[in-house]
Length: 126
Image (cartoon, rainbow, N blue to C red; front, side):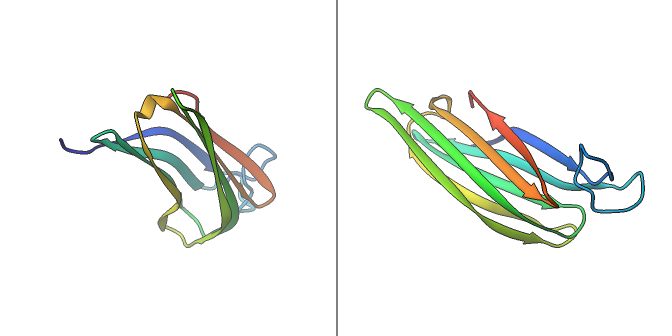
């Protein structure tokens, strides 16, 4: 069986100088500063979840990845977090976790904080 890969949730953090975005520029119309995404692969009853970020502009921040897995045996929770630095145009995996089972048994949330603001990318049914 081949692995299938797909994005389950994405969040774009804009660089527009306002309280709703991450102010990375003094202009009123800056390009998107940071894109984050939850992506997974599923093959042979193994699921790997990747928390990724891509910077349009240089950025320093922190992330928190929370993953809940439900199964007939109960529930497990994984929490990963840390700091990141990305240069303009750079993409990286912030965190990852592999599970036995199915993608639909996972609930994931990725929060990224940069320039004093936090945005959350969430999927309640992957």
